[in-house]
Image 1 (cartoon, rainbow, N blue to C red):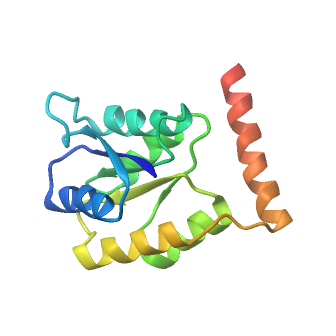
Image 2 (image 1 turned 180 degrees about the horizontal axis):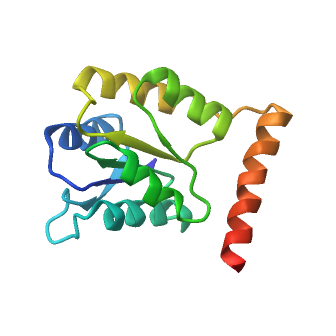
Image 3 (image 1 turned 135 degrees about the vertical axis):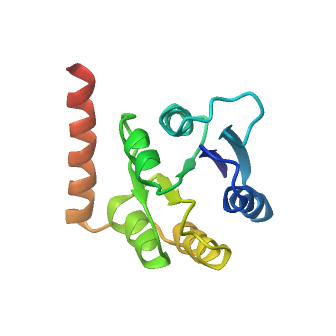
Length: 151
């Protein structure tokens, strides 16, 4: 799978994230502080990773900043992106299952190596729910994106 990763800081957990994704066999595209010469501002690099997903250059993305909040906000401004800030495996599972999230947002401050691996395990194991209500909600979010493009 092609995964875009962004971080506004070159922190050990961000480097571990890239390493872990590659170890799992994913092709990783780096943005922000993870790539020499790239703009490390959280809004800029999170948007870049999210646009990779929206444009089809990546299947999914992981966006990081100190709390994960700014990265998730910026990513969610890109139409077609459903970014979820996840602090644990249960939240990551639910974000993929019920919300069909395609961008994982992580906080660099509180994500430890063991928690990171648990989150990634849950994220990549879960699949979007086929439940009609869940699909209706995801479709509604898509309509909100479409309406935003017109404005």
